[in-house]
Length: 152
Image (cartoon, rainbow, N blue to C red; front, side):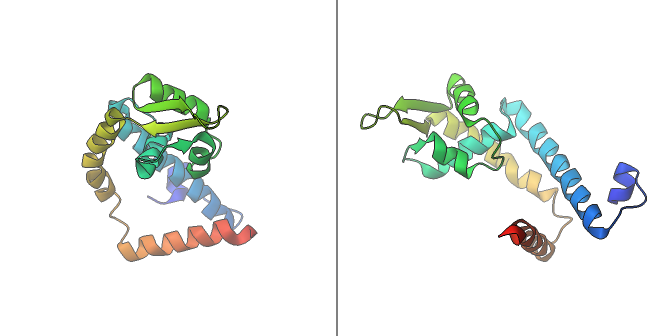
């Protein structure tokens, strides 16, 4: 369905305005689908993002600032997310022995097991996005990278 029909708006000021609204609408749509997929596992997309970052650094521990730098949503409260994940047993937080002001974060075996469960359903979720071809996805990625890098 076109963006015009989705949001019931017939005209836009320009193709660029339409593009911005379409990206924001589609981003929200993807986020909500992703959140629904994660809900049965008891985590949010932001918590999932933290777990994936930590899994990628395993066995190396990470500082909170490094996790924050790698997050998709830079406005997320990483400290709060890590604390929630710690309460669920998915991550460890430890004071660094060499620098008492530094907190080291790592994913637990329970967190890794959760990600493995989620990964099993990942291919199924991605297959719902296959209405866009590989070549089209490449072009979208190229256009989005160009858009983000236009301010450099």
